[in-house]
Length: 636
Image 1 (tube, helix red, strand yellow):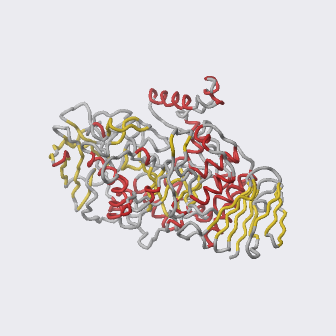
Image 2 (cartoon, rainbow, N blue to C red):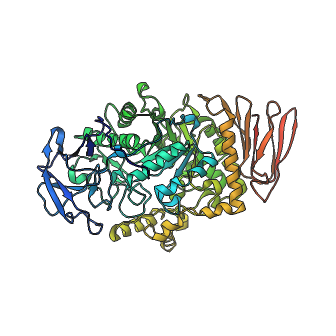
């Protein structure tokens, strides 16, 4: 841990809520517009962590707060420093105290007292860090709790050199905002400003970010603004206006972005984003399920968020949205009527590839035929649905992506959702052979879009990624039943008895099974896949074709029912991938005599080699595949 320096950040306009340490004084400020009285309760450490909100184990002091305009309450305390524990008492209710909705740390869990944190005490070493442009980003999504044996920020930090050697340029942390229990995906966060104490203290996360920058890696953080988790979300105790009946979401009532008191709610989430960007120096934010952020205001919340964060951040910030609507306005600048989001997860590529290679047909896969025509069109456009009718949704989906840059589309063949939302948490290579997996990986990593890898994908990790939680007994029982009921419409789980085989989210074993086994890298089969990923990412870095700003700098072609090719306009890089169909011959027109740099069947990538036969003549390159495979031609 680095030594601390006693310095202040000075007054920063965005730091308006929570316990704010500034110039030797800690200001406590909270939004509670309907409350008649709010008191600051200074606490001693609890004897044991609490499962429900209770009075502090030992009250050291109580201070009445002053009501400000717009329903805020505040009090200054010159005698309280970093590490002080506190809660709030509302309307003289002595039997109940609540943690701060903007707490920077919950050392005893989300039901316990909040701790004062002084972010200025951390000594950063990244003053010369320059984050990569969007066109240079290769994302590596990971879950802190299952990425390493320790399941901590330190555990991730210890493997940064490995990620650099792999060739990614950015890590994307699944949500780290604190949650109830000791294990969770992170999308049930309730203390949105507090890093989960089971991963480490706030400075542990700062160490991770600082070290990542020293290694040349950007850090993206997944944040959730469309709902709070079901246990420990005490914002509603302070204000009934965080949610509204005017909008509904998959999690219940919608977040109040456009109703009475919606301005304060918007400010809460915007300040949270600035908190991660400025106090932890993350380089990008991945915004969860932005389609669930319903806002009828003249200026959409997302536009206000991106504009405000960029205005008040110290460094460039990239925003990535998860949004299934395929809306071009999401990716257009604010001054052009868009929201200012830089890039979006474009799942059409995953879905079309999954249908073609693994044959999935249920759920949203029913909208996809999985043909190479669909794949080529998606590679060209960024997404497949540009206004066509979706049978799954029952209405049209998508808009014309013309003019958007290829880097604005994030492609993957695995992510936490596409693995973890399967009943068995199976990864793609659990359902397709490794030859197909290597071929599709080659196409992904050298496609024009921004690639995203999910932890362990690069060595075809055997561990599943299951859905796991650690709620109290009754809520946990409901989650387990709900998880199993969720799959009742799938043929494999139509029988209630078959649903009992779905792993219990509440079982500790479910979490443990999801942890990566790093010993697998010593196995020749896993090591071969890992070498392929590293070689492909090295080509991506060196090829110099991925910074092209517009569509037209590349072309995707269908060679037959199972084979596609991507050729870049510079004429220096061509990728040919056969994704199924067994043996077959194809011809690809290739300008010049580009050298073959690798095939996915090279001995360094697999011991079970099935070489590609190739020949050249005036018509181009003639290839014979004995099974799925890929070829990369590149003139360096």
